[in-house]
Length: 431
Image (cartoon, rainbow, N blue to C red; front, side, top):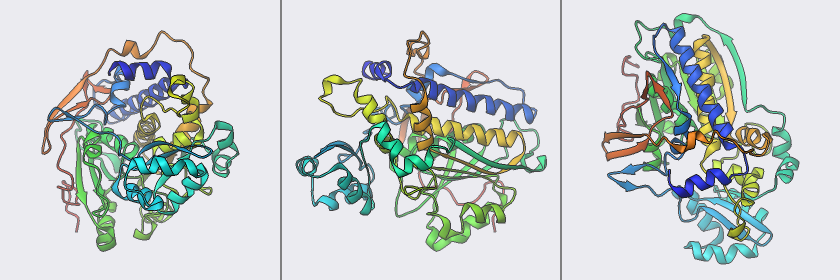
């Protein structure tokens, strides 16, 4: 962690430390619970001082000693006629949506046009084109927003679980807590892949499947790809492949926009009826109900919409009123670890069913905490910056270690080339 990042943690007006520590501690304790249930003698611990470095996994990733570039040219805060908007243009199709909406070819052109347009008009125009954007709102304004009202009473994590036979999750003489557990990973970006990376490094066989038309960004894939297999499958052509995998899948993690996978026979209701032993974990940006229930989003966009960006602007008074942001993508990472916690607890208690969570839930949990208070426990003075060195198809990787240890050693796994795996379980033939 560099001096700038350290200052951002210190100046953040929200208690992001507590949110992050809670999520990592919870996941670590749940992993120990699974190990104990399966008779594995080990010690699983969280390293809280590693959290700031680990939660900046993409920013601190190096490929052959070359740092990554975290944000696209059309991502960031832009001034509107009546305030600010936050745009997300990291992916080509989202950048194209922004550019086509305003007929621009550069960031400079965009900065000239947007100050003549209302922030709400900018938001809706980009969304209508399939892009990602949000007006920067104050907390009170978001609480009066229709989506804010719908989500106000929804917990960060919703559970609908039922007991299953312990035999479902048994394997002979496991050496790692999740050995023998098969996880189908239909997630992207940070929150979902953070969750499934932890499951993979705890011993699960994790198969990530991505669509060919929308490939994951290389560095984004690497930053949370340890321990997984990676396949590319066009579900419009090979929908049956998923349903050949699911009968032998223990856990399905889905992170696409709610109901967008229904057309492939992957509605939550249909999956639960067809595969009663399956544990289904679903995460979204805004929850799955309300006017934004089918809207895509990212951590930075949720921060802007819910008032976090406006609150964080107060910690940077010299920036000329520009909205601020949390020191890391804390909604993403915390949600990833908290989702892993509930998955691990469900395994330990031999339960199947549905787990739902959202970035909006994390934002609401963070805002509801008291404003940051002086503390002597500042991530143990930021002393830990443990790096995992991995030789991969992409070259030599230097990446922040996961903030959880197994018998004193940081969890780790190899990284395979994106799309290089067959869509099948290695220990089973899927026919």
